[in-house]
Image (cartoon, rainbow, N blue to C red; front, side, top):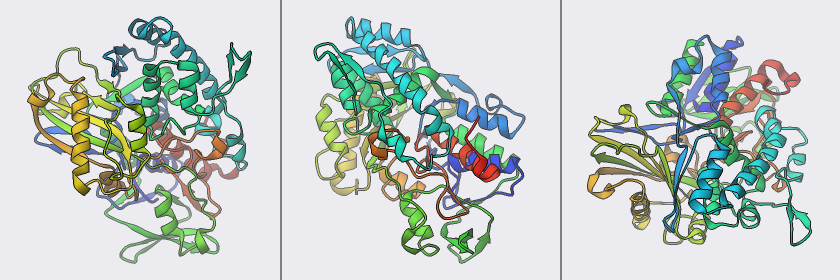
Length: 499
């Protein structure tokens, strides 16, 4: 197995419990992939995802691979309120966890009568899209005739009173303009898209499943940070006798009799295998297979053209966390067009615009030296694949994030001890993804442009796992990719999906 990301470890644990001998080769010195941690001076920070949607994926993993359930391995808690939103006009709203009625009421109160109702109606339609796509996009291997998933938009059409007909939105942008009709609700929808590395102007309307998923299944946090989830999955793998080799970079996939038959490491060592599972991005995958296959044949490249990364600023603050502070606050951009234009261009081609900033302030003693200090994580979508150090671009962008976060963290600047700036380049260095981009989840419609490569390949014996394979990026999706790969290896062509 190549890589020790969340999807790969989920596959490894399931394969081991099915009786396979599993060895994982990881180029870095630790497990978890993008689910990483930064520590300094007694402060600790999640540098990847900070919250967990759809925890049932990992509950199922622990149920299927051992006696201890997930909740005995990590302290999993619901975040309530799910989020606080600060809009440019000064409007401030708290949205409850997993309550459509509560969200409708809060938005009607904060934004004006009718606004919450429109958001609630949108969630009802998003549920239709979820019901239509959940099985093929999360629980089943990608269909051999995957093109059909791109042909029809699963988000339902909406009656238009003036036109006396229905019309079907094809992008999140059109949902915002036609159905939400409020710049603050548009900002709410944009925030969900950007958090998954999607530009709402081009993301298909089927991406409505992302806010629905959070609404329906809640927002969860693992005490000690989401890195603790990675630790628990790693320890479950060890308990199932999975072997990990860290600091071991794979340079090629060995071919024998027309199928993948092992791995070659940097030092020339060759390890034989009956099956090879690769948890790598498409660029690295092509490099690994080019010697075994002519012109990359047999491994279909990723159709998703993701250029968005995650820019993060870690803040060490003096002074305790104020009572009643929201775990997550989203401070929305005052200039939507400028933000979206910036994220769609390579870094350095335009002056950074003030972005939509997510502020995470977990009330977690494990992340701070003592109760007289606080650790805070700021994050925003940003262009990937460029030199952020050039011309001080990274520091200027970090200043914009900190300025926005002042709306969420009282006395932020006077409390600041130090900050650590992390660009998409840090993600590239730590995960091996060349551009540092964040893989979005697989989505239906848009002619299949938002689907990822299938977990099986035309190179027999080679399987793909993790965020750059079906069903795409995000913690739940990575976990499901592991379940799908394990099912395909154990059950072969008879496997029809997770139950």
